[in-house]
Length: 498
Image (cartoon, rainbow, N blue to C red):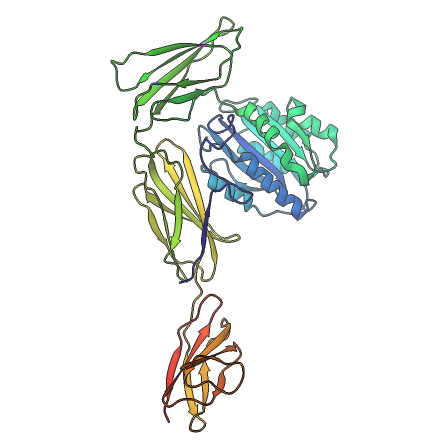
């Protein structure tokens, strides 16, 4: 059986890790809540390689954020003669899905009609002309342009800013600085970037930090949860000179347990909780105490890990491919974590760009068979674990389906003398690489045959439909098998009697 698979964390230029917090910058992860609309210049003035660089840049930029309502929502629209919405704010709630959608974006082409795209972005962000700033989470418009004349954009950009939208811009060409300076929201030095498209990755961290500052949520976050410890993190709103934080925490369901109280300096933004109970739900609250202004209390609920060695698996540790056939493969993963994982999601698509199909499985399942696949093809298979905690982790493998190995259709022997025979066959020459002919008998006199003392063999090209054998032993058995790219197909055998 022929199959190929190699496993790797989604963490490179092609595939990135979807692990929740441990592999992400401290400021990212469950830090933020807001809506981001990306306006991507996809007109004909943008070269194909420039567009590809922009798409990869966007994928890397957005990757660390946790997605969905109450977190970060991302939409993408392309600028062309008529703008096109690639996906809306509620389309993608997983990193894997968003990553794939961005990377598979096909360039729209056409004229640079940025003004129409901005009006469409207003609608996607819920900005109504003349209505002013609305309620809800922060809103961001990120505009990527190659610097060509964008058209009349001052008024739609101003309408977005009046609606409370923070406008950021990245130019990869010779743009009019004054035009772009008028469009973006202050501070200009953080929200406007000029960069060569080949070096666009160098602004990823700065631009992401600028977005985080806009959409950072006033939220108490939990990191590095273990059996007896956990780390709380929050956005600092005080300084050492302006106040202190009052921290309270206790087991949620144990009403008799005392509140643990700690007073923290105002310049703290993180604290480790120790001596916690394993496998216990805790509620924590943090109150900023300041004489300058009233500040709201933040709270969070979390559950410590079980006090059992080797239970803190976050990813499917192994993902393997087996039972590969022309139209199916079996995908398996482990170890199982039914106490942690709500369900598994298997996404698969033929490479390089194919339609993504999805299979959902329960948290106690560790295998599934993918069917109706394309023969002799490579597939990218991603297994995502959706945890009860809301975290999403994933690992991918690349799998290969087998060729369809059609058998030889016909074989005939025509005697040409006492010890000679004409061998004729019929196969499917469109995919056959050649034919393997073998027979019992003494070593033939003609060169090119390889043999042992009791059998001989001969490889012939795919255009061959016959061959002549001589010096055959009595009752020699002659076999012909088609040879494909990956394996030898089923052959036919006949006995030459004389």
